[in-house]
Amino acid sequence: MTRGPRQGLPAVWDGYAARTFRLPGYGGAAVFLRSQVRPARASGANGTALAFDVGLLSPDRVTHYLARSAGLGFVERLSQFLFRAASDFHPEKSLPTFIDEAMGLTVSAMSSTDARVAIEVTMIEDPGAPVLDPDSIDFETSRAVLVVASHDLRRLGRNGTDGTLGQDLAS
Image (cartoon, rainbow, N blue to C red; front, side, top):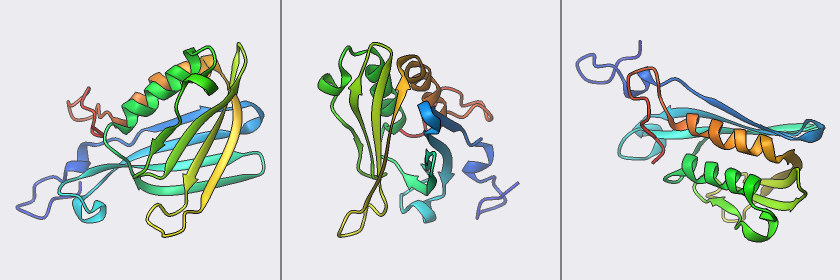
């Protein structure tokens, strides 16, 4: 067990269990998220912060962005976006692009049919750089997968190992 800097107290991240999320698409494409707690000295915040590893997978490449800080309410906002992408008749027309500037992530609904939605996921390689260098993948997924993903995503900010189930660490 990792101990805090004073008097052997447990560090806040000792009780946090990392969670993973996967948004699969047709043809082998997917987006992955893995939550983690970052201590204040690593996050630059006054206290601990929730961060995410982001993976973009396509049939010909895989790219990982590690320990990306997220804006307030990230988990809830992205969950709502995915649910609306699944439930809106034409999400490419009715749904604004999801943007999390802190993480450098954008998600857009590009087109849709009755059963599928094509989405584009873009990561900025270094959100603090003077010139932004985007990396993106686009793929189709089913509306049913988007609904399930919107519910699964909420687990990323929750911790069930230390009695704080229901506490969203990202907001």
